[in-house]
Image (cartoon, rainbow, N blue to C red; front, side):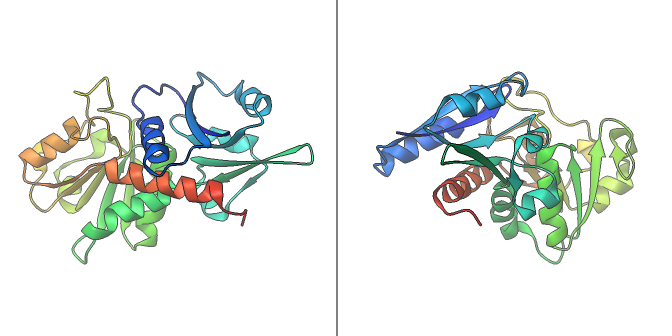
Length: 250
């Protein structure tokens, strides 16, 4: 039996186990299971990997997409450039253990946003500075957009929420929530921006997919914005993870 799973904390919000369990049933994949590994810290990460020889791959979610890198033998170029990993391929050969890091968020983000990016979308505001935010910025910059990141604390090269005046909101056509705000069970939470400034020229994308219609997206819809749920990104990055786990190391 091949085992796959998800590490992060907390994991009550995640649909990954449900997605892969249903995938295995639908595609009649009978030799695989997917489990959750909630870790309050990474102290026991190696124990999980070393103790189960059937474990072949892991997804990584908040808050470990960046801090997991120090445990890996090698990180694929794109994930290294981003500075975040959300897929680990585990290889066991001749008694040795190899941990290889990848970033499938890039595929999920690109697949989700491409239908909405045209010549009128040139500036983006990314709320949050974690591993998912890094992947978002990487994709948007590759697509030629100017990106500003927003942090809760003053950091070099970043805005803070109190900087987001009307001129900034008005001139950023794409606004992305890359924070956990609004995630189940705290579904009423949302980023602290001036929603009254939003209009039909704005696109709001939320990486949170549980619930599918977050408070952030709901506020955007009320002001005429195009809203994009994170559920497509979940499905796309999950399929990319499966591809990574089942293909040879590159």
